[in-house]
Length: 175
Image (cartoon, rainbow, N blue to C red; front, side, top):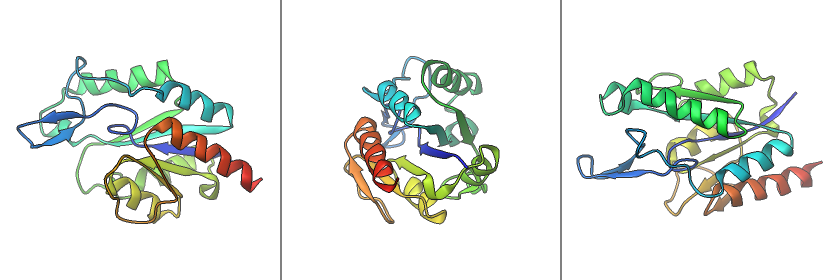
């Protein structure tokens, strides 16, 4: 059985962009806005070196809403997978689908595809949807950022680097 860290993409690995039209931060909508957060590359390499599969699970409703061109979303995923130690990226576009967080469909798919022991996995994210998705499969959730998630949180961190450091230390404690 394998172990993995599930990462949310936007707000966790990639910088969010403020939208007046939505009065909220969103995923980048084009290549010019796409920016990986500081320390992400080193953190992903560190977790990979520690034996974790790095898997990204991301909701991308802005594609169906017409804000992101599909080719840009493909570019974002291609860039992440070819630049960083990421094993796979699972994206969901349709709200309410079994794979759309907080639903755990992509966790279930990844579990089968990569022969994962979910007791040896972690989930890192920045929203309540990430937290609930993790909780539905009893995966320890590490929260990035200052907002308050809904559900159980095993650790809070200001960055992915801090989250990965904590996960590696926690994983070593369990051995």
